[in-house]
Amino acid sequence: MIRHLLRKDWRLLWPFAVLAVASQLVLAAMTVKLGLFQEPAELRLFARLFTNVVLIAFGLLIAVLVHQNALFEVAFGERGVLLAQQPSALTQTLERPRRGSHR
Image (cartoon, rainbow, N blue to C red; front, side, top):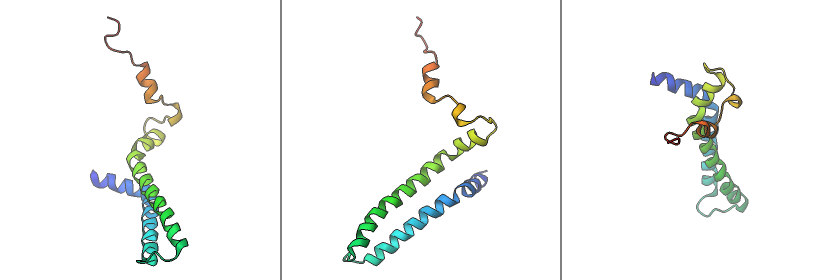
């Protein structure tokens, strides 16, 4: 069962994983190119900015990995209901009657 889940996750998310790893490799190559003295100033600036790109890429990969099952289930799952047609958690919470409020 776990192997099936991992295989499904890999099949759906491999482009995100490849982009995240490729961005990390590019950042590592820039760090090696800069060397000890951080000499080309333009490359140093670009490497600092690219660090944020790498962090965002891995953050997006983690977010998509965590939420992909729920989104996939809603969009293509057995329920067959579009995401926009489902009530939000806030709406469900507000519509749920409070226990003991009538006493």
